[in-house]
Length: 99
Image (cartoon, rainbow, N blue to C red):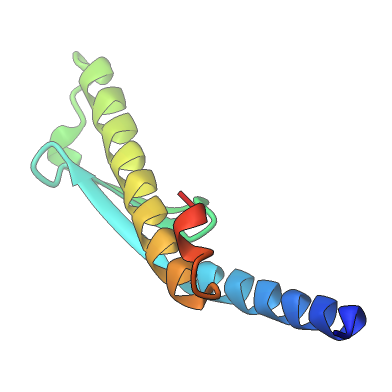
């Protein structure tokens, strides 16, 4: 068993996974679509859309709650997507150890 070769293969797999995660885009909406958050596979917020009708200067707290809800839901969906992608890339028996 060549440990150096195994380490190189593991690094290549990690690099491939990171590249794939960077390409993942997951969106989630809150308030019936009033706020939509889009995250990448590393959970970086890359886009936030707010319907102008949702902007009420007398109820900023509601808009804040909608933003939080949309980002949290998108984050949950990223977890699902990553689990799905990584589970398929792991050797048999290791995919279930991710979650």
